[in-house]
Amino acid sequence: MKIDGGPLLARLIEDSLKAGATAADARFSRSEGIGVAVRGGKLESVERDESAGVALRCFVGQRQAHVSGQDLSDDGLNDLVERCVAMARLAPEDRFAGIAAPEELATEGVDLDLVGDPATTAEALEAEALEAEAAALAVDGVKQVASCGAGVSLSERWVAASNGFAAHRVSGSSSLGLAAIGERDGKMERDYESRQSRYREDRPAPAEIGRVAGERTVARLGARRLATQKAAVIYDRRLATSLLSALIGAISGPAVARGVSFLKDRRGEMVFAPGIHVIDDPFRPRGLGSRAHDGEGRAVSMTRIIEDGRLTDFLLNGPAARQLGLTPNGFASTSFGDPPGVTTSNLHIEPGDTTPAEAMKAVGRGLLVTDMFGPSINPNTGDYSVGVAGFWFEAGEIAYPVSEVTIAGELPAMFARLRPLSDLEFRGATNAPSILIEDMSLAGT
Image (cartoon, rainbow, N blue to C red; front, side, top):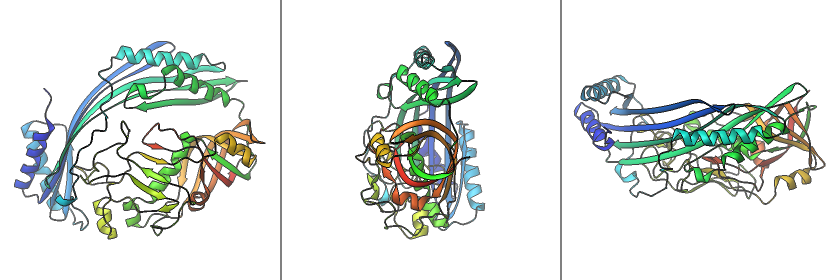
């Protein structure tokens, strides 16, 4: 029998206040999913999972504690409340902690079409995965498919707090991906393609996913090393999102409040070149990051985080805003039952007018990055280095694949001169077109 999370959370909040908490918030969630893996034209495994759990956060004045569990019996829930309130009484004071005031709460719901497809069978997922695998193996030069899988999931979540906020959300997703291995002259290369969406109709056909993975793999065969030099770099759109992730880390309110951000003094200043816009849109229908409220129950809105090159604000949850003397702006991560973090919803950088091919012709020579290994970023200075692989281009044309290259630079300077190209594609919660940055340091042989 499925539990209605609304009454369960109302009970937890009420019992917490009776036990001595001055405020509380809680989350109940359950999920179910099916995943299949295939290998060599045959089904390799089927996994089904179902889970349910509850999380509770209690305040005693400015002291807070949080606990979670999966025992949903009366005794289990009573123990959860007792432990949480007892822990809160012993916790150190945090003068910036607290839940949102009632007047700050989101009041209007919105239908974001997040439920996803109706129930999907393991047999249907198997057929999709086999189709993708066959398409990858059909690409000349592909030796084998290292992994190939498809899955669907459905989750349901209730949240509530003692300030009167309560919300319920159902969301689903579908995924398909594979990694292929190619071989030439005894040397192997590997690449992949994977896609996730709320609805299967919103992602490419399985055969297209397999073909793309196979062609990417074969294109990397015969990779060479590069000499150390300075050159233009184009980050393929699959990887350009890593630069947005670095930006988000640097303007995260908690990081700024701790003083560990290379952009901590740049609020309201030009960080990118004029004409650059970075937008967060929580209301995109079927978006993987869409949401009707933030993780503390506050209203969310479409926000130009970077507007015409200028950093408009930091990303703030309640505690970070209080510490910085600013106003929370709807970027708290889901925190009912836990202390809040910071997150975006559907983030993207607006595309430019130049295609990647036109950019290669314009700069003449450089590196097209298509794979990346462990970026290293100094959060205080923005010093940046990352191992990459990709393709060297000359006279505006792809010349040959390359590997074992390190790119180094300073993110503030990189942000100031990066140029988004025109090939933006919405395929995740964070999206970017390919990005060109000239005069980058490349370390090779």
